[in-house]
Image (cartoon, rainbow, N blue to C red; front, side):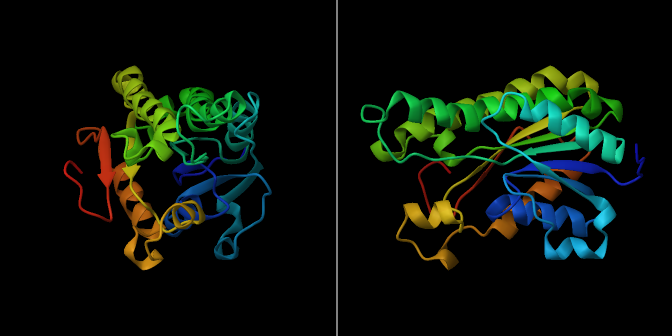
Amino acid sequence: MQLTDARVALISGASRGIGAAIAKRLFEAGWGVSLGMRAPVLPDWAQAAPERVHLFSYDARSPEAATNWAEAAQSCFGRIDAVIANAGVMVPKNVIEISDPEMADMLAINVQAPQRLAKACWDGLKSYGRGRVIVLASLSGKRVKGARSGAYAMTKFAAVGLAHALRHTGFEDGIRATAVCPGFVATDMGLGLSDRAAAAMTQPEDLARIIEMLIDLPNEASVAEFCVNCQLEESF
């Protein structure tokens, strides 16, 4: 076991988009990062201090993946301070046309996988008295914008509920959980769902800045939800 003084974060879906931006931001801030990727590859930016980067082949659909990853990260770094549950999937169908397998797949990745990952890391998060969990939800977890996003919204409402449940469960042990709820983000997913130009969407790097701030706040500044939007809406 390699013990480190640096705080350590597990980040799922770290190969691209929001997850990759978070990983780079935390690494540059001095964190140790364990990157959950379907096809693990050491990022170019990690060459500066590869000893602070751990790669793990993570399949969010697998019930065993979270436990195996948590054990591997703990063995590598000797500690776990934060979980960033970022991996997600979107099937753009309404609640009538979506198939059972498609709905089950979204629930498995968007809801069950973050719950399993938090559970697998729970003892580590408790150890230092200020564990942090970020659930990458969506503004689709706050309102249903349209029929085409309805099935996806069901899973993201559940993801927001998960973050609140984790916050209540771990609060006395110093664990703080936050649901981060962005609108359109300039990722492959966001660009595939909107005609909006990438420059007019929230940038992954800006979400990474927000998440670094959230997990760095003291226990006395708990943030339950953080909504981010690139466009004007009535409520967000």
